[in-house]
Image (cartoon, rainbow, N blue to C red):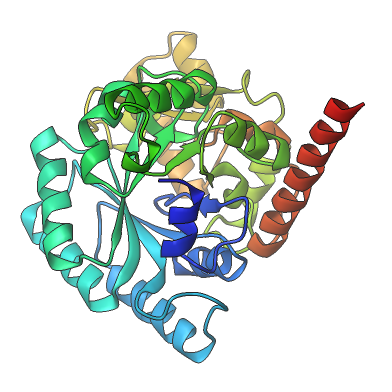
Length: 351
């Protein structure tokens, strides 16, 4: 399958295909709707707490009914929801399934199961209860892709540059995406129609990085950090100020479990960590400040909303994010830049 499959499932999509990542705490229905209205595919970041999901989906559904998205299918709601599985019990799983069916979500994005069996159970349940909903699964290794590709509709291949949580032992999309595609192609004797569309994510923030991902073989891109700096994200002005002020993203972000330990989410499975902005918490930990001292300082920072110490999950591409813009402006800018890059490459080849 290729980009044509994505556009047949989600006919409102423009090219290149841009998906907003389901960032927990920052991607609500407001951002998801704005992205889908701009010709992308927006995802709500429900995470592992679905207590407010019904309200968000109700708002989104009402918005779509009162102002439909041009070319979007009317059989499903043209936004998706992302779920982080490891911390979801059977009660919350049932709630998620019920909402998926009731609102006829066009897509769900599954990530970070506590076991292969849990992921398989979610996929089976979604197929049975909501067959029109497309299933995207986030993977960080070739082995994960091989295990899952026959049972899902979309593979989201996340590289090491991504912000937030991901597989700790992974590579950048530069090598990961081509190896995933090469491996799956060999397994299917070169029949690419048997391989689900691949969406690349990790370090993609503008037109050039989007074109790079497409050149690697991806059918579309998923973007997180750039949409954190969208006016429709749930990030507050202080958070936006931090994001657009970070430079040299590879140097000033780090993959670590420290911030999970400080904010009380250290029960993430051990094969995951998170890329975050290097601030006082990390620098002091490097200098040997004791964990109990760091925890006390973190509690004070939570009270004061001190982002020089709190967790700021961003990817290495954050250094290229310099302005806060609307989701529509971001998508239009990326698509325009991508067209320019492709044109310049074509021109250089012909001269």
